Amino acid sequence: MLKLDNLHVSYGDIQVLWGVSLEVAENSIVALLGSNGAGKSTTLKTALGMMRPSEGKVFFRGQDITKKSTHSIVSSGLFLVPEWRGTFSTLSVLENLELGAFSSRARPLKDETLERVFTIFPILKDRQAQRAGTLSGGERQMLAIGRALMARPAMLILDEPSLGLAPLIVSNIFEVIQQINEEERVTVLVVEQNVHMALKVASYAYILENGSIVGQGTSETLLSDQQIQEAYLGI
Amino acid sequence: MSTHIIAQSLLSGILVGALYGIAALGLSLVFGVLKVLNIAHGELIMLGGYASFWAFNKAEVDPYVSLVIVVPLLFLVGTILHFGLFAHIVRANEEQRIKNSLLIGFGLTLIGQTLAIRYFEADERRIATEYSTDAWEFIGLRLPLVRASGLVIGIVLVILLQLFMHRTYIGKAIRATAEDWQTASLSGINVRLTYLITFALGSALAGLAGMLVSVQYSISPNIGLTWTLKALIVVVLAGLGSMPGTFLAGVLLGLAETSSALAFGSQYREMVGLVLFVIILSIRSQGLFGEQNA
Ligand SMILES: Nc1ncnc2c1ncn2[C@@H]1O[C@H](COP(=O)(O)OP(=O)(O)OP(=O)(O)O)[C@@H](O)[C@H]1O
Ligand SMILES: [Mg+2]
Image (cartoon, rainbow over all chains, first blue to last red; front, side, top):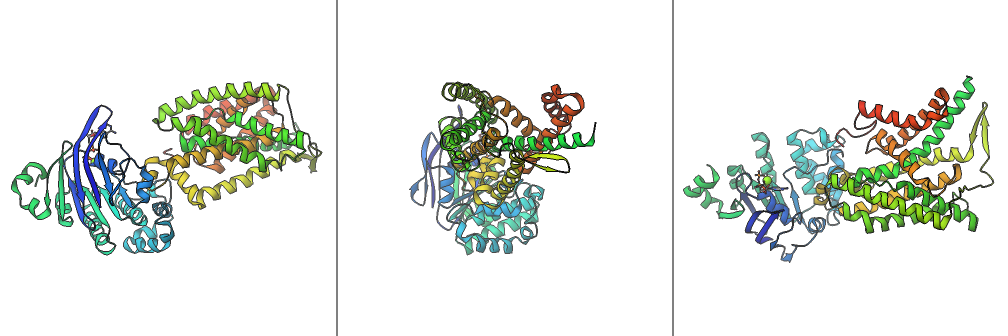
């Protein structure tokens, strides 16, 4: 579904990705793990066309999208919930959700998807008229994921969805991710530092360190590989 | 001083202020969304004024009717200016954007004035229709028709803009882009197109203001800077992000000007706006109606 092929990416003169390759199969949940500053967010930004690689290519559903603009990538069915959540604090909760369905693939289905989002996150229904800026951190993350659902994506990428959230909300969020994957057949790539949680839902994972993929495997293998765990996963 | 004189001058203040408000709407919209300060906004007002003037003079088109040509014309001019100039600087970071937009704006101001002198001549012009001097009289107050039209048009305009920004998808996209263009593009919004439409809309609003200037006051090639300044004061007073707020701040500026002229003499009229500007900013840096975080 998504294939990153040998990505080299720099911020100005500083190169942060050194040949990152990874693949996410259709209908799977894949995790991208790694410590702070490893280059996880940069990898995601590059996939979404927010940064241009100096070398390498990005393929989505078999199409080369390396040079496409962000909004057209989103319209083609790839949706990112960024590290900074990606909600508009000056807009109401409802408007945020509506804008999730901005692209032409999602807009005709807006009302029906909205119903579904409200059943998954009832709190958003209660708060729909409220400004998103007044939501709590957990509610903001629910809104961020609700927005993503509104987009009717073929594939969803989440950048550290558990960041700053209480354990109960984290497991709730991961349940929803799993539910979306199973019921709506949405492919998922999730970046996490919460390794346990990530490996519980993902079937396959990559480990990124200093801008390179240093390990990969099914969740079971990674969980049983003592060496990798000690070196990179800090378990 | 009689209450009659006071009432009359407050009324004039509201009417001139409505025009300040209309003149500021486009500038505020563009500044709020693109973070680009178009100081050639007054030149666009001038151009709109001349377009109405020539339509009236050459083809006897009523100035209010001429809006059906003038507004689309200025929308087109805005599209071209954005494509040719401003689109290239919106990619820079915010500080760079403002600096570069000031330079481009100054350049455009000079070019606009020079061309206007060359092709429209330096004379002061105004649209003198049959109804230009008509006025309503009530309880001893005089309400000049063309000036009252500015207030009515302003209120209708603000309502329409408010509906557009809050009820339509493109309006919501504009507000989203104003807050955070990166998140907007991650929602599937074409940010460049949004910028283009916003800039063109800002120009179209300047065109409308220009028509009103040429029926209510007069136009000449050098009025641009005056109107840019008025609009700028209004934008700073109001803060960004609220169309009704911008319009209301225009009315407040008009009221402040006329009431100070009444109290201290008309030579202080121009200064009042600037004093108000400093006072409000020192109390509320986001302006009267601006977003806290904008
Ligand atoms: N806008 C930027 N300009 C310059 N350098 C940057 C920028 N953004 C990130 N970097 C650098 O690139 C490297 C990778 O950053 P990135 O945000 O991709 O890491 P990450 O794996 O997502 O980290 P975290 O887990 O903390 O979010 C870091 O060294 C970071 O300092
Ligand atoms: Mg990150």
